[in-house]
Image (cartoon, rainbow, N blue to C red; front, side):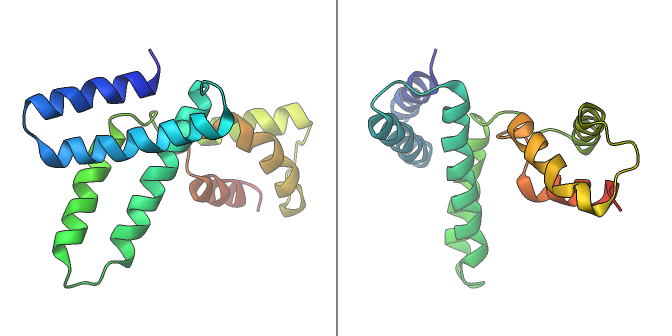
Length: 148
């Protein structure tokens, strides 16, 4: 079952339960997924669906962070929306899993004593492997620590 179908089912359930906020969040997510499918003119792959969900999560976090301090209503609404989006997001990799993936990339590239100059090569190989399952900033920090 595609994420579009899953979100649609959850949205119908939210409407039946008269949960307006959840329904609105799911409606926004469904709209983003459908728009991406329309732009592509084909069904989305699982990776593309996760990419859309991650983008929505990132935008909602940015909205929450940029909201004025006295606008707690906006922050609470964003937090509720994030909670709904997280249900459909893929499980995020832990730091240990990211470090293991970096080790695999280093081994595949044949780099025994990594230096800071190898960071570009490592990131180029690593990012497609962890895309959608790990935050780019966290990956960048971990790679930077490991290649000192």
